[in-house]
Length: 275
Image (cartoon, rainbow, N blue to C red):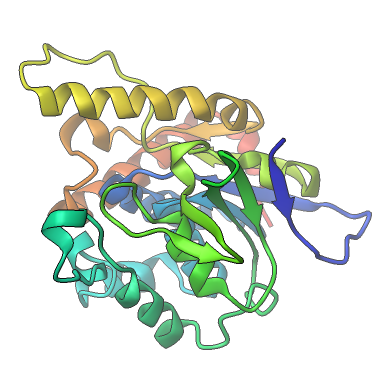
């Protein structure tokens, strides 16, 4: 059974709008465009759930950084290439593992209180507990940096994050759309899935087969969370770019903005969520 590690003082009144952000590496920059489009239409989520890159973007948004400020952080080389967030040990070529020291340092720099409770919006981060092979949701405590880095610890690239002898890794491994973490707290959930299912083209290289196999796995583990979203936005950056297209952040952002703007126009009932 999956765990939800939240210890908030619950109120009978639910948050009106929740936002669930999927993982997806560089494709997750589309989340920023979606959030900008939502705000341009007067929609301001108050509770966020996210896996992997969705956890990173969601956490900084929850801390009060606007979409424009998030874009500026990317331009300033803060949230840019994945290599900028890695610290490679000497044994990297043998172990294939990297440390998350720079991501942790970035969180300390930009969110110095390092606390879930002091965020402007409530944030729920999905991680995978390797010890029991289950996903978990974390949403409280003063170790925000640890749980964000755990959620973004891509297997094979990053080392695990340990908590009381439990090994934690990327939440997207078992739940790439963790809307379950906020379903009981929100009247409505808007979901953003930057890895929607696509029929693969002719797969000529083993690496292409691997990439589409991982995406198929993520789509399968996203179905339950996707079903909990009343509104589901699917940016199409994946058609043109991939999870490591960090240089294309502006174009990927625009994919998110365009997809959300189009979705709102086609689903005007979402405007009832305006603040």
